[in-house]
Length: 140
Image (cartoon, rainbow, N blue to C red; front, top):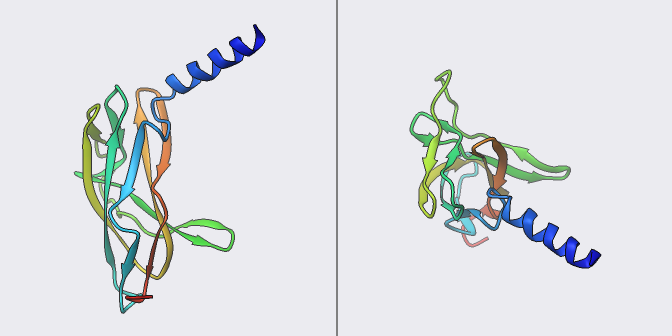
């Protein structure tokens, strides 16, 4: 009986986590971005897929999603850029259930990267990250 109760609790937890990684995906279009000059910005396209049954809200700056690039350093992931938003408050970008949104951001420098986006659905708010991707010398 105790095992049945534990299994039911796990299933309930999985169903009650609408912003869990299995329901909300941030997918970067490429796995490697080559650039000759590591001081010039490189555009990274990404897609957010809302696999939940609720509308999700993505942190924004104007009409753009504020996808914050992070580069892997010795001690973990370090924020490296993102949109510089001069507006005091901007409404979030909403993504309907089952819908996708495609946008882009820029990175500067070589290394291992990921994107972080602040997401909310009702009172549930958290950050979600993309899969890691690389930037470096073309063919490197």
